[in-house]
Amino acid sequence: MKNAIEIYDINKSYRNKPALKNINLHVEPGEIFGLIGPDGAGKTTLIRILTTLLLADSGTATVNGCDIVKDYKHIRTSVGYMPGRFSLYQDLTVEENMNLFAKIFGTTIAENYSLVADIYSQIEPFKNRQAGQLSGGMKQKLALSCALIHKPDILFLDEPTTGVDPVSRKELWDMLKKLKKEGITVFVSTAYMDEATLCDRVALIQDGVLLSVDSVDGIINSFRKKLISVKSDDIYRLIGDLRKLDFVEKAYPFGDCVHTILLDSEADENMILDALKNHNHINLSAKQVIPTIEDCFIDLMENHNG
Amino acid sequence: MDEKWIVEVEGMTKKFGDFTAVDSISFRVKKGEIFGFLGANGAGKTTAIKILCGLSRPTSGKVTVDGLNVYTQAEKIKEKIGYMSQKFSLYDDLNIEENIRLFGGIYGLSNKEIKEKSEILINKLGLQDVRKELLKSLPLGWKQKLAFSVAIIHDPSIVFLDEPTGGVDPITRRQFWEMIYEASSKGVTIFVTTHYMDEAEYCSRISMMVDGRIAAMGKPSELKKELGVRNMDEFFVKLARSK
Image 1 (cartoon, helix red, strand yellow):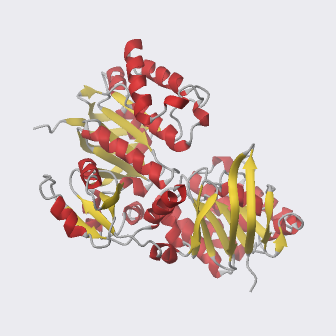
Image 2 (image 1 turned 135 degrees about the vertical axis):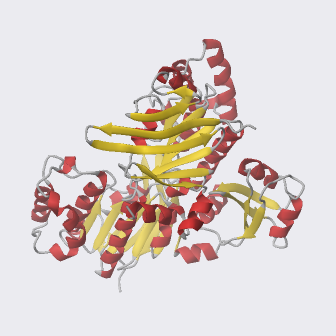
Image 3 (image 1 turned 90 degrees about the horizontal axis):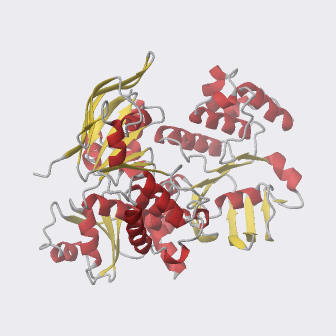
């Protein structure tokens, strides 16, 4: 089966400042693909290029088999796009916004109602309210309904969970899983590393460069170092103490623990406990843990920066 | 011994007409503690923070910040606190030195103190070469570190951080948390409001607001155990939905 998205050597600069450098990746049909990276990494630029809203400086890409430059009109009818900033008409009502989008794409709310029913039914009681008067969570549901009203093959979402509380975040991801079941390919960007685990595959992006493209398991399996999670009641002092140990490569805060990467494979958590036993730490503990995507991101970032 | 309470709140209530935004909440925050103040949008977090910053008066209840009464000493409280938010902190169209000078002045430092503190701060953050550059030319991570340093430039008793680390890369974010740990180890109380649960994991203690009340309070590790959830995200969803 042909790929939903194929990207070859895409470069883009803004006033000589590179935003994307040699991007190559493909997205398989029907997968949830996550573009994961911090603010300013180039996520929005890449999405805008793929949705034909911005031209790359060099390189090519196809979306749904169509070239992003030559066939831009066709792409626009076959994809859905939910931008990071709320961009519906604030002075139109919920229903008017929906009707407008349906009409632009030559369809009706009724025709694809089943696809959006889950989300739209939650905001339908407010269908006569102006979009500008909705709460953040409801605005997002409306934006998603509008992006889906023409039953796109591929849905692009740019940071849909930024500024959203965990309950709405969970609802959104549940929704994306349902869309996947409908056969829609989902291309979603996020700055929250933990959301990577909800994707089939991810691309980690930093400073316009792809650090890795793989499944989350694949990325975690390629982390070859030994990672020890160390805890004590005084995290700040613990970080300093761990960094002084000659068998520790690095130590950094991670939630309520300190993640410690060991230099040689012979070393282990007992060596840490032993080395710190005279440092007066209260409730000191250490155990080996499986790295999270954030640990991998840190490691890849440092390797990349040399 | 040094169990000094910087925030003491007892039965704090705030009503707007018929609507009770904050419903008789009670909690205390210890000196040097990193306290996470969590809740969904609309749970009453912002209302509560405004009261603690001396910007709004509670309808009823006892509230003190660093021993000062919010009803009668709100102006004094403003001198004792620092504030930083991801959305608003420094001015993009002022340079780094100007930003420090402006906020130093607002926080009531003398010109001499501002000069001394500016030097220390610029050296500590390694900003010597860019001190005359406009803030907007700085990467987001640097802005955040600078914003935090400025928020504690007047050695406040407590600093309020509103969703401080959203969107930055994981390395910068850890440097930022180390700065927070450092400040806390020097006795500055840190009050973090956030609905990003991975930030909550860094706090020594958190409270979770649901519909104007505190639904849970304690160490993140104990709360996770209590509710039988793996992470703070699940904790949040479970509590916010159980209302």
